Length: 159
View 1 (cartoon, rainbow, N blue to C red):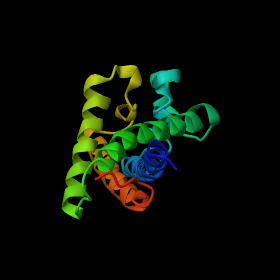
View 2: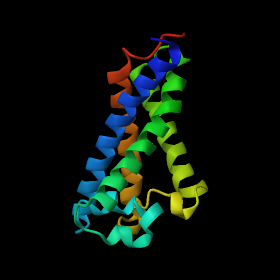
View 3: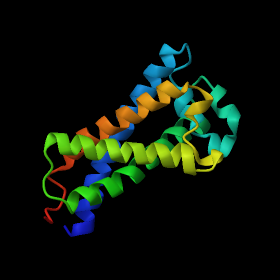
């Protein structure tokens, strides 16, 4: 397997773990706010369906499946540069890995809610307060760390 295939595979593992972890966190946070656990995932489909997507409380293909697919693609998107970063660095201690994932998560939050046009945000702001969104980016960091640990055998050793 060549370098980029190994990085791609490690990003697939890391992004999938981060996607599952953040989706679970979003569901729990929505429930704690008295909302449907599906609303944050449904709201992610707002790039196609507009702001009303966040008000959909039931599971369906056009909101839930599209919202999850979009969210999963986003997690893979953020996992790829993170895995490239790890591939070109010496092996990371746990504190170093946690610092790296905290930085990656902060960059993702800044891009998602500071640089991206409204239509391309995750859409969680339609359903959740800022504190819950911030907590979700904390879970993203932990998901990236857990995924990176699982994917370490796929990651090329370029150091």
